[in-house]
Image (cartoon, rainbow, N blue to C red):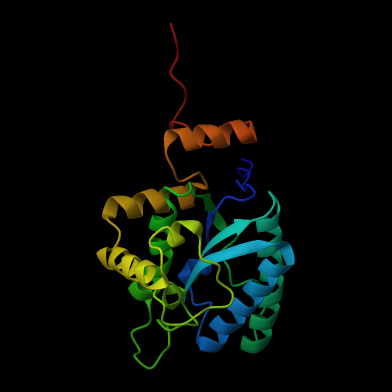
Length: 232
């Protein structure tokens, strides 16, 4: 069966995930993480993609990105893959790609779903960080959370308009986001986001899905499992 074409639209945010084979480590330490972020920043600059958030856990990278064209996201991720994998393999004396396959992505309705996805991304580093307290897994290299809490500016990150809507001043925005982040996502919210990411479909309401389907001239909702029912 042919792979479903990935949905990618200009000026719309996308949740992106890259995972190691069986979630095997692809970021062993802060040097790996720093190199990935540097290569990501360059790929985004080259292909005109905005990076709104990131979180790197040992076995995966979660990103929130907005491409400037329909093809910019795929090109940026391709450039990132070539640069990081070549460096990673040379450093760790290995061959082949460390990733499980194609990156996964989900189109995100704005502004309705952006803050939920922003929290989903930046919660990952805290939820899945290594247990070794000497590791910097929850530090600024591994997540953009500090950027949105006002602890440290990340030059690679451009905050989304949904974040700016949280307040009129940096202090108001940072306080409001911290309160939102501390609440944490509900189980239902996590299931919705992960289902959209796994299925490569839009994350949003019915009207958003309909608009995307019309723009792409194809269905973007999953079909019922099994064979169609026979009609009389």
